[in-house]
Length: 265
Image 1 (cartoon, rainbow, N blue to C red):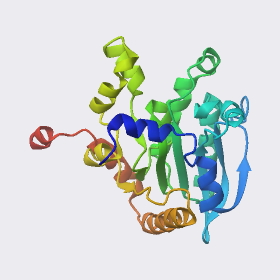
Image 2: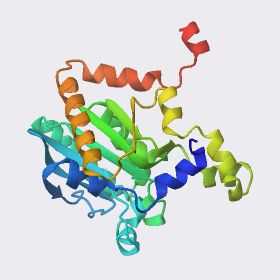
Image 3: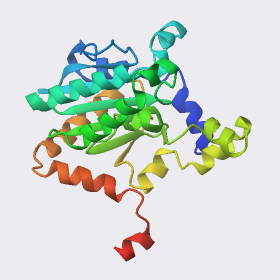
Image 4: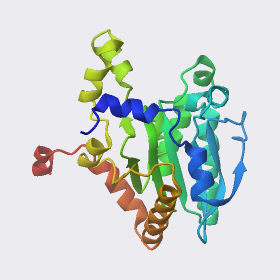
């Protein structure tokens, strides 16, 4: 029996689930981490740098939650500050300069909404990522590996291909937040989750993602080998495409177009 939408949310939040650094260490080789946004600080909630995918040099960026309590606190529970998004953008622009594809792993309940983050331009940092990613002249693949919450997730997911693990979720708001707004009762999160269409199956049917990745062997060597093979295959296809930007633009313009709207177009 398939899990309910809210059960999927709980699975996506499981602290034992592989995090961004697990994918970086087990899918890629020779990872060299880069730090800082060159403006304010380094944000440990976003990890990024250069690595090898087989024989292909790539820039890899991941939102990192951590596993144990101390590490999760250090990573701010995967809620990036604006400097994290600026660091990610710096690395993406560097990748464009040197012709490296970009691979992002997304796992966040949302960007950090503290006063300091707002004072340092959280919303602007996210908006700049959305704009700049839409025009990057190198292939971009984003994989949702856990939670994909709001603009904090989208800021690393304006990509040519977006994939989701089968027990990951992707939503404009958390079920608890949605329930608190609509019913003034976070206890109705399960009802909200069913209405938000946040599962991988929902995202695939709506055209938000291209691929759902099975979790049958998650965490095992075979799992990471499969991810590596799929990424290499996809990058080979994207690298041969001479019309990346217009197709990326068209991909996002098509999202949300219903059958009725298509008839009018």
